[in-house]
Image (cartoon, rainbow, N blue to C red):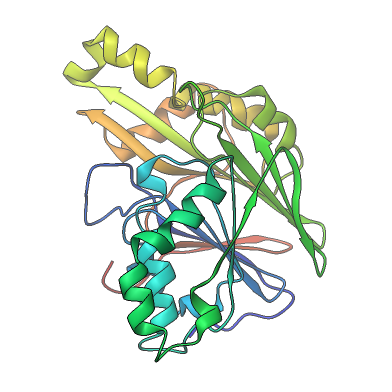
Length: 295
């Protein structure tokens, strides 16, 4: 298992994909290990499998934060929640799980135990009863978690859809900081809240070939997501020590390797296209480590 201490500030991209069910890019999910605690931001498809590859039991997770309620960001939650309670091959979760997210999070966390009532009833005879409980917190912009020097703030972003509240998150600890954009189009509020960040993890979309020639699709995607040239403007105005692309939404002939040249129109700083299990340690210097093994 990965050992962390109070000085650790590590961000690991568990999943960097979008809705298409690819095996090399699982659903959006990010692990943040900071100050001796572990938090997960979004729980897309395959989040449990990625944690397993890192030998991190879900029983050790101290909280889950949702950026918004699109299915590709939450479909892996039930696996994390219930398999983490059962605990194989590591220790069982014996405490309730705090879940933070936009309006609707409380309703989701109240109804999931109803949907899995039979499973929970049967297993409650064998597993810690508190370990299956969900402690929901509906958030607004501002500080949503603060403990032991760790501060997690939420800020509103624009994911385009009507009545779809969406947030990004900023994690601050010992003078270091990481910002996760969540799903958003170009957003001034994100730029404001990301100022001074060491690490900025930002979503991206790109179209090429026939897809780029479809004006209706281009308009729809542009209203919900950020193109590389737009992200370049964001990075140039924030100037993080490192910018990382996440949640790659590529259409037509667009490829991950095309993202950096397109971004360079507006940004000349440090930039990495994220991949599943990419790990960034935030210290005096930022260290990047790619997963070695079967991903």
